[in-house]
Length: 532
Ligand code: TEU
Ligand code: CA
Image: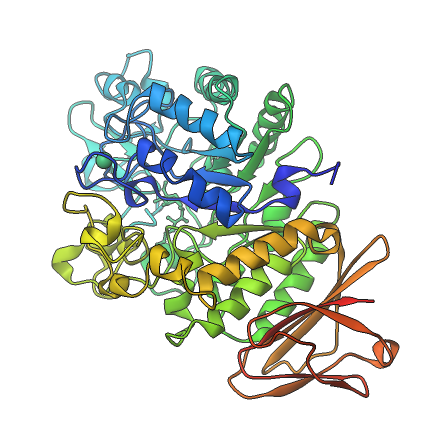
């Protein structure tokens, strides 16, 4: 297709670099490891990879505490390794997206080390320093850290508090300082010059906080963080002009892309930051919170489509902060349910984001307290076990360490790797991996599945979801049975006499029974049909 636009029509695959492939046996995934797997990714059929942060980081939040925005952490490789990764990815028509964490830095960033050194240091104003009327005995206001405890840390040396939405080793930057802003914009240019195609903006709508530092109003909630309405510590109006500046910066290069991670957001909030002159896309994480019930998904799709207007949607079932979908949906080991989930994600109108291992149906690793690495788990255990579960090493083979690398991995491998791994699934025509490959290929070759409008059909909200995708005279029907039992999907009178061709199913090789406007599906079945 001549008008193919990679971030709109393609599929984006998130890699958690620590856990993808370890080339030098130190137990930590790295850039040469990723480069070595590009053929695998090309064969899978993805159009772009998004790398969770690879900048130098003391890893208090595993890369989301950055100590140098223009460098590569030596544990992941050298700048030359990154350039080689970009070159080889581009050779395979795979775009590269970097994760920029600009709400906060590491407390080991030279800027913060300077900033905390004295009140009159030129970098003092680069962070959010405040005094409190109660001195060291009480923080300047009621803002909380989402990772637990109050959002302020008292600094003995200068007798002031600094603010951090996340752990205390992640001080928030002062985006009102023009030097901070200019420095951050230069980061976009730096990586764009190196050929980076897109950016994922970590908690971008959190960059500004209330300039008067007012207390958040109270509401009912379990954790102290949830007992507040976050009107003064997020989504401040000043953000809009930064969004515009980011877009203008990227538009100086061809086909660059920015997707924002909207913090604490409903669809409306995510949508307002997107569109022409603003971000290309912003995440909404609704899908991550739903049980395996079609009505929830369909209702959200309709709301998201309506809210976005002419902004292109995106859909996410998994990322590095969330229990994996196969675990969340209590998917049986045969993977048929996860094939239905895959078909939904890859046939809705919008950019699908896959998370490494999703394509082989990886599950969360079971965690003991002694396994914990993530600060969220450390704080909230056992009420919340944190995010280590979904970050375990990619399962490449049944060999040592699941083929991840020769050294002991930084996080344990899921014991199911013996059977659930890339190598085993490659040679099994019925595997979930091969189903993903077929889906991605079908999507690539079917304009209606990429660009087509989304037309929901009547549905049984408890079990089945059906919709059409239509563009330029091509109509594709997607029928998804979320249940274990066989069921009929009503196609409606307009499609009563339609003739169909089977494009893809996980349960059959020939057309399903279609009678008097009813399509018959077996349990856990996906059917994708082309209108003749
Ligand atoms: O996430 C922001 C965010 O909302 C999550 O941290 C969420 O609060 C958490 O997962 C609940 O358990 C982004 C990154 O995706 C995350 O990995 C970072 O830890 C965080 O920002 C700070 O940079
Ligand atoms: Ca390594």
